[in-house]
Length: 367
Ligand code: NAD
Image (cartoon, rainbow, N blue to C red; front, side, top):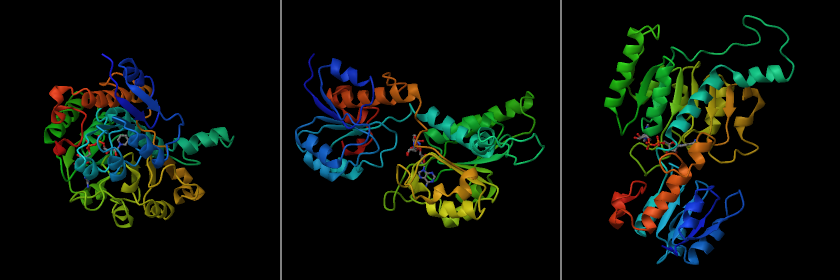
């Protein structure tokens, strides 16, 4: 069957695009690795595209849906987060948009854990010692020591898909776990984790007993040695419990001065100026960030201050950047495969054409 659907991909998402070519789609791919200007997206949509493949770099709002009136049938986003897509505008124009939840859950959680370990055990300054030929002698505590992860307490902020996966990784490191989520408490999951913790202790696989429980936000910050953030970006008015600047001057002060913050969620969840200050004034022990208020991180960001470089790890929005996770054409394994399948579902009217039944569509409420 030759499909004559016209699709514009704002980015080359890899070999999975061949699935569309093989199905006869007329596919245009923006060739530059940088994001296209909004004006080009509007021009393409105006020319009668049936579908758009987008990334978090593209602002998809009323202007885009207006330009696609009568032709644009789907926006397929290569990410689980979709704060760049205006849901109300999509709903108003009755355009379904899809995302790639689940397939990046484990990759993102493991990266968050690796960032946590890198930060706590000071791997970056330690490697610098070696590379810069400053490793003059072995000494019991000089020039510095790291903090163990094993046996410590972590607060998981947001117990959705990635938060729960992070819990699993932390339980494997014999950590105590405090969970906070105002909207979704998966008690069945944490009961199962507690059973595993108890069994590991009973079988002699971990020395100390460990525990997991839901607590308030304040309590989680007060008691945790590590805080790992797994929330969506929700601005004022988008939720009763918005996450914009959830970590600010006041809440950072609620953390222990010996605690570490890890953020792999979205940049604006953390007030970066407040964080840089907290690090500089030793309000907290360290932070590892994968996401920023403005991406790429500006040259003059206070987070680049050399005075805090030893306790501030900065990654380039890289948590889901693993080969299978990003590129696999299998929709059960790869973001690209899932993104393409989401687009096909809508355009080819799979599931009897019922958008509400399509697994990767986000804004089902509009249909
Ligand atoms: P999810 O929707 O499954 O989970 C988010 C959880 O946060 C939900 O349980 C929700 O109830 C909770 N939440 C909402 N408001 C909260 C608040 N104020 N305080 C605490 N919890 C709150 O989403 P997910 O699949 O786990 O992904 C989480 C986020 O991670 C995504 O929205 C995305 O922004 C980000 N992400 C980043 C990367 C990366 O490369 N760094 C990769 C994947 C996802």
